[in-house]
Length: 317
Image (tube, rainbow, N blue to C red; front, top):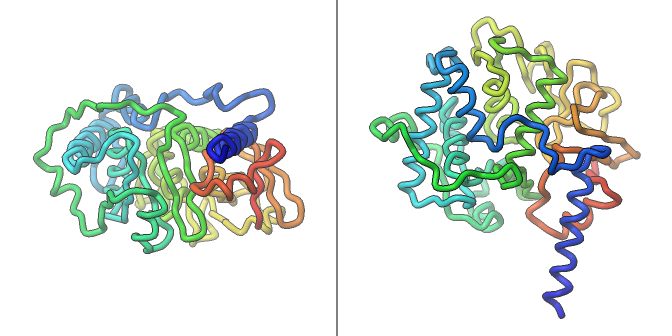
């Protein structure tokens, strides 16, 4: 009887999460992105624009990035990391940490980004022992590895791609969450191919993964700190797009300010305007969100039960 009740509760939670991910009549299974998973993004960019530079300082083209990701996947495979397993990652420099992310996704595994340094608690909470420490020299480790890794498993858009973990909560994001949020950011900001772009985020947030790692590749940009056309910053208020996380004051956000909500994958709005395929409203200290960027859920089902109601995600500010 206890098992049946728990199964029913889990099914109710799944239903409530699904309803919160709907946008009007557009259900989340009606995928609104051109890629079937995160790995296919770099595969597609390599096929179309192999010789285009994506990291100016390192002179890394789409083709070179693709090779580095394959070499990284070979290395991760040698560590006995399997598809759908979680891998905690620490910062190993840029763009190495971004390459590591795509290596994990190429394997069909899920990356765990930590907000804090409580690694042992994160391991228990995320049910994993896989950890890539910050003393890893990725370029040196993968230097002599093959360039043609053949994935044993190709992730689905509905599969988990990322967990953002803090002592307070663990947020699960799918491949579709990340691609949908990135696509919606491109639409609302109007960022075009070959734009010179710079972002100063550190690798301890979902916004780092979306805005610094995925977005430049998705948009076909050149990542550079030398005379960028567009800057994205949480430190410089004069940047093209300034990042704000104080959602209590959302109604005061200016038109160049990106509101960050990790439960909505990364970006919620530009100023007060919701990103594509997202709706939200605010009641006192509660934010109610619907749309395709809404997370897969928290690691804690009790938190899911309290947060997903009436076809919406409730964020208590």
